[in-house]
Image 1 (cartoon, rainbow over the protein chains, first blue to last red):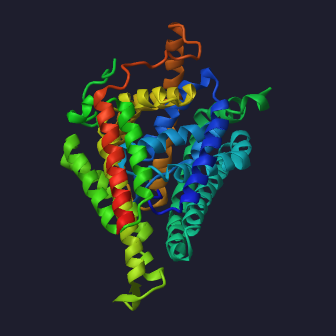
Image 2 (cartoon, each protein chain N blue to C red):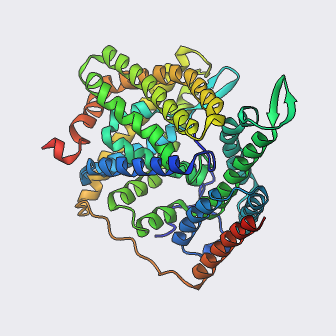
Image 3 (spheres, one colour):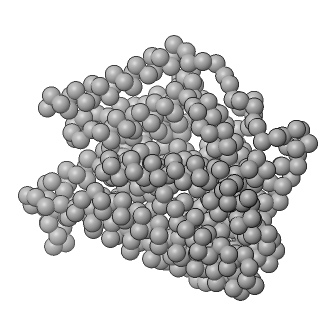
Amino acid sequence: MHIVDGALANEVALAGAAMTAAGVAVGLRALTPERIPAAGVLSAAFFVSSLIHVPLGPVSAHLTLSGLAGLVLGWAAFPALFVGLTLQTAFLGFGGVTALGVNTLAMAGPAVAVWALCGRGAARGGPQAAALWGATAGALAIALGAVVVAGALALGGPAFRPAAALALAAHVPLMAVEAALTAAAVGLLRRVRPEALGAAAALFLPARARR
Amino acid sequence: LGRARPHDPASVLGAGVRGPLDRLDPRARVLGAVVWAVGVVALSDLAALAAAAALAAGLTVAAGVPCGALLRRVAALDGFLLAAVATLPFSTPGAPAAEVLGLTATREGLRLAAEIALTANAAALAAIALVGALDPVAFGRALGRLGAPPALAQLTAFALRYVDVLAQEGRRLRAAMKARGFRPGPDGRSLRAFGWLVGMTLVRALDRSDRILDAMKCRGYDGRAPAADGPPFGPADALFGAGVAAALVGLHAAQALR
């Protein structure tokens, strides 16, 4: 879900922007010149994949894929998802200009978190184990993102709490969808392109940690 | 080079709108949209916000944004908006105004919902006119010239360049699935197929990025991109900046006087 302009308290919007700026700065340090083309093309791939609409009973939801982005890109997911969200805000009308910080934090923060938690497992196990780690990462990334969105809304005051609760509840079916999808995608990557999952660990670490 | 990409009607991000705003520097348009959004978010008076939304709607007409594209973006925006404000009339304490399905909507709650709805539309309509109608390539260059870190500017440039290429590849994969009898439904099989589709898109994207890097190295790429330069701000940009500032000052003054 994307938050629109005017729905956030000023302090929350500012804090989100500051945290996103910090995350993007760390992520950019992980990008050596060699990896910029890969990160850029992957950022386009995630943007395009997020336009796939999956039927969910009477409605359809568009994919987020933040868990998968984290597993493939590691810290570089922060700038990559920031670029994707900037394009969505500017060209597609998804989310507000002043809420871009919080909206990025809700996708990229969980992406980096699930990479830290599940990245190793997804890169090392067999295809089945990798798929299981992928399912965990997919569901967890959506859950964490929902918590960020709901928390940012709820900080606006008691009147926003039902809206925040609604946002949390709406993400539950999405968790199941993204878990199944990420499991299949990670299982496939593990089988046909295992280095794509190891790449995050080996190549997208911040420069200092790699040494 | 500014308009290297041919017009593609199936383009995901649109291919820019030809209009009177073309005379402005893309940097001025991006800055204008951000300053406008911040100024509008700082408003709280409903009349001032309605005036701001009307001004922004006028700007989309002036920019010549096609009706269909405008409606699609406003529909996307207002979908997210509705999710955020639908509960507010019922959850804000205050004087009762209406009963819906046994729930009491308050005047204060309705006011708050209207305030957010007007703010979101006023900010987003201006962004659609100023930034969404830009040629995506011009947008990427403008970010670089506005002082975005070089790596971020390069990342944006790559993403902009390959969004449509990958969207086409995705369409080919979807066509291949359809040709083999795939019908999407809300079941596990479909989700697994979509997951493989996403995974294959990533595999192809990674292969493509290897070829891109090789081609770039062939041409002497060493991590630096040539600095994006272009003409400085002109009189049209000054006029536009003054207009945005005057509109915001006027709206805030009107709010203070009421």
